[in-house]
Image (tube, rainbow, N blue to C red; front, side, top):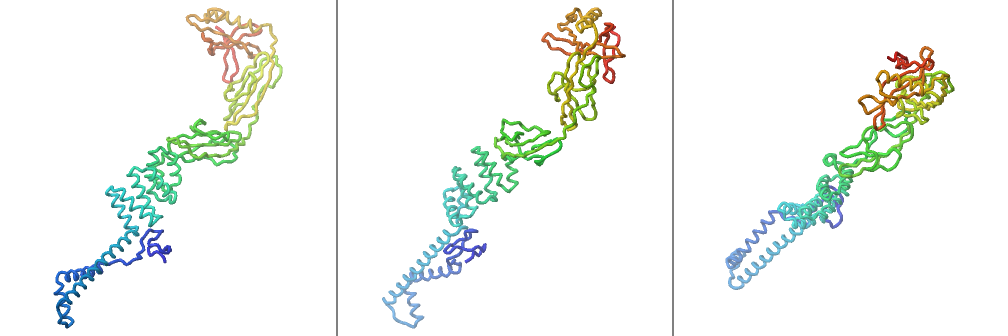
Length: 476
């Protein structure tokens, strides 16, 4: 037999449909006409009790009988009693049938539960809704009403179990999300809220409680191999922070915080990222592998080859476009934190080692160019004597007060450094740079440079022209 409401097969002996919960009429339903007929029968019985003699006489006349007396009275009483018994039996039967029908009626039990719940009679409501759940075990509405009763009765644990079971069986039953989330909120079970919302297909629910979610971050670029520097963005929804690693280690709140695009240059990167929302709930870890295979630029071209020189040289390198060149003179590897190459560099006196590196417009470093020089000047004027001559001239014009470089009215003093030489008009000059030294021994260039002719011992002021080459001018 199939359910007349939903068409699903019914189990033998069931008086309800386990699929839709509707009651199947297995017993006769008494219509108003039947009850009216029974009421008339009872009225007739009442008349027999009210006037049994009259009823008996009437019966005798209709049947053509004339006997009267005690036999007639006895018969009348007998029929009256029999009628009363039948009527009482029928009333009891109706009551029993109706009670059985109501006990097995899902709709009746739910209506009774709703009425009791509205009147805040929660225990009565629970009794009816439990019966409704027995009739239709798959009824989500019955479970929902039962959970509501338990919540209002202060039995949150029971309510939580019912709501969790309800959504475990049917994630589309949206009415259960809000009360269950409210219970989780009260217990600060934010991880459970996040897990619950990940299974919810109703975006209005998800958006309403978005602050509790911790969705896995997304990368702006697909993993793979690239031939240029990659600017990688990590995207995450909701309020919180993203943390990441580039070496494949598991990220957490102590890892690097994502603040902006990550520049991935040459190499292999196993990027791992995690989102932690404002409630401390962590997302699943997002992972992607990026291999950046960049073409390495050639090393910069240096104008002066390594070797020994007896006249000063200006060291130059090609600089154009978006290229940047950096160098060191202490033997360390150059980087963007080293000295930037801007103008030709005068070759230092004695032995020196230069290392140059170039960065292209993608920030890729070239191979390092290394040059070693030995500059030996053929002169009788030593660097120490050249410094003494300069200081004497500066004392004479009032720039400093003594050979220690003290300046009138100042606690700081001037120092002079001679490390290189240059040529102009086929003449060779020592190059001397002036520094201002503070009491804490910090010093900075004053911008003044001087030159001493190694043949004539004459002193000049030194400066650079538009091309970066040194020129001399009168000292006074």
